[in-house]
Length: 464
Ligand SMILES: Nc1ncnc2c1ncn2[C@@H]1O[C@H](COP(=O)(O)OP(=O)(O)OP(=O)(O)O)[C@@H](O)[C@H]1O
Image 1 (tube, rainbow, N blue to C red):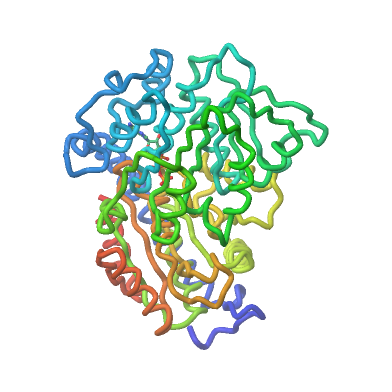
Image 2: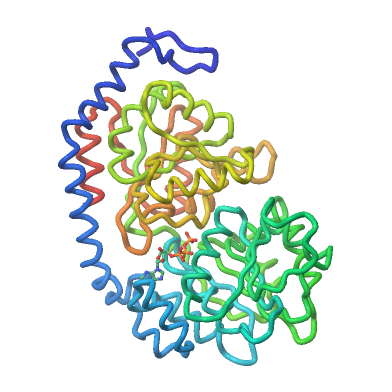
């Protein structure tokens, strides 16, 4: 490989014969193995439906519940919505949180539960339960860190509220006409900047707001990120009677925990222990690459595995995501890239294509590290490990444990199997990965980069 020519970005030249034969080899291998791969996928989907009931019956599983949805005190129209979505039993977080969320007088909630365990349904059902559909005024606000997540939450609101008269509106960039004067929808879901702007311009009448939800709350409250804008929104809310504040996330690092308690005073709390943070159904691997450029070759050689189901590749920088995707596309692979520098319409189109399975590989940044729920994603690659300096814009090169948990949590949703692969390529990245391993208390298993067959075998086994 070292003999190959590199382009000006430090990538191997796409036209170089050896490079194309490396990727071509993997592709033809994929071609031969495809029938198997497809049948594996169908089998594993079948297995998942069988094991979901088992998992929901296992008291140690985050999906376990002793109760039924009927026992949680939900309105008949919402029960219809839930069953229409194919849910049969609540998960642990739903079972524990819903009675507390729905009790009167309303009490604040700080709820933590692992990625993919059904937090969205818990807060969406609360918003829908608290809305008086006969009053055409905003009554529940929900904030999320990205437009992609806001759109996904909205899809849950409309699906669960299908048998109600709920009206909804987005507070995301480039969605409403600039001269909009009033929003009368019951539930508004958006990102903090746009929501704050609409509130300040009095487009949103706040007099009837009863519920305020922060999804990915630790991220939304982080002083280095969205914290200021989120606080602006909160400060504009009516004080009497108090609005019910609901914070949910899979992670609440220590530095946000005490602030969360101030933001949502006297809250009921559901917390995870440190060793429960990551989901067991996600098998974590790493690959020891020779250098930064070698990571690209390895990614290309993984292509046939990345497309067995769907995969998300996380990079540190937008330009890396763009360069990798341009390079892979030029080499004949079908990949998409998504990051915050793309405009709103393009971002919507890209995530929708990926959600529909029309693109199988999405190369991205932390912009979709949180919340995105696409069940077919069975592989996550940390092309670059997440670092604290992306979060706080300092020179802090410690790994960002929370973002790691969220990134790998894009797979292994609601009891499904998934795998994550970290690329390490020098002593620094190696030690960063070791810190992640230590923090999560879970072994990250090595996969050899030179043995494609072993790689394939290990990964397929992990997905079985
Ligand atoms: N009770 C249920 N029965 C079956 N499926 C469910 C149930 N509750 C939620 N799900 C499904 O589980 C998946 C994950 O749920 P959700 O997106 O709410 O996870 P989450 O806890 O918010 O994860 P994250 O921390 O990554 O945001 C979704 O596809 C959702 O439809």
